Length: 349
Image (cartoon, rainbow, N blue to C red; front, side, top):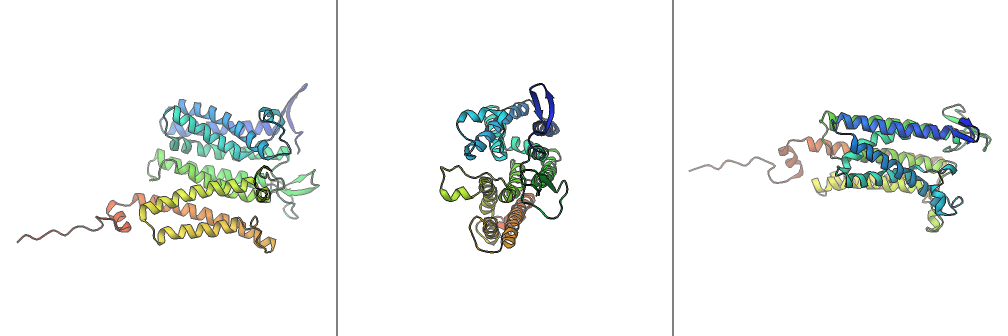
């Protein structure tokens, strides 16, 4: 529809539809987080303070992320605080929100992992709603399509004079599914208290499930954001969101793998996740590594690599839950630690 789609016009004052949708997304994010906090039977005051600080940090982070890397728009740091000019980046907002949450956790004496678990479903819901702002701004579109030339699978772009893949629609669906998954995990851990996972794991699962598909979309969208020119020349050909997706997902997978190594030692059960991650990242980055092959095979390998990494992360998460639920004797028997078997009673003569 373009950037001229306005929700309200009063003389020289106007409100754009994409701004309205982003505001609704933020409201939904905060309300869901407050609801989940109340289900814990905990005070919402500290979470409300955290939400306000995190939203401010998210706006600043998204502006810095966008303008620092979009060099054609960047002419000075003053533009970062000129919010009416547009230009926001989701990863910058996420990093800003996490920094704000960490600061509030420190000063309010709250558990950082628990705060992140509370806001993870809300962030996913906010992304699911906020992605629809791209319908009015004309952004976040994929390549031109010959089939499925109908809304919501594709939208007609006047700038490209063609039907383009509506990536924002697919990203919204994925985010809403993640919202449902993280809500289920939250209720299982903090309300019913029958999920034996560590505090912060719900946010880690959100990060894994969101970042990997996001990197795939960034690789194929028509207007990706690249690294700032001051970085290595080769990095200028890599979409920055693809790189951050790999970094965040690798951090989450490393946490899960290292936990398994510390629990079970170095064995086949800890070697297969490393091999699966290596194969997954080769497929995930095969296009940026300039491996010569037909485009359809290269694109398929990116998707397969993404799926393999997600499946590996989910499998490690599920296995860690099952092992934490094992009786101590069975757990020791699996790890080979002392106390695996009952000691024989010594005979007395």
